[in-house]
Image (tube, rainbow, N blue to C red):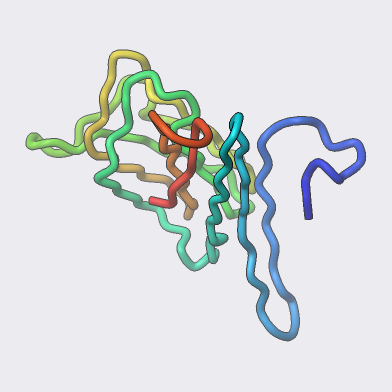
Length: 151
């Protein structure tokens, strides 16, 4: 399904949750082709199985200061939740100002930006309900400007 083919759907970022009630499973992928001047590239991300949802996530991928929508946190449950994002360093878990209590409405993806002036060398995400986390990986060169990675 292409989001742009859905009549009346406003512009923006969306998360789609699919499940199978009976019979065989399904495969969900996200494929994006980016075109720039005289070159193009296609990237494919496999969908998240809900069994990957967790209340704790860690990644060694640094998040640079001021990165807009650096993380997408998807609360897969029917219950509102909160999350906190902290940096991990030699002194252990260090809270990040403004990211200590992030509201995660039930069944909704929440995008979180890294505050200006705060580099996060390693990331620790804790939530009160199971969530799926996707990390924005800005590209400095090549085709396209951004990509996503599951952490």
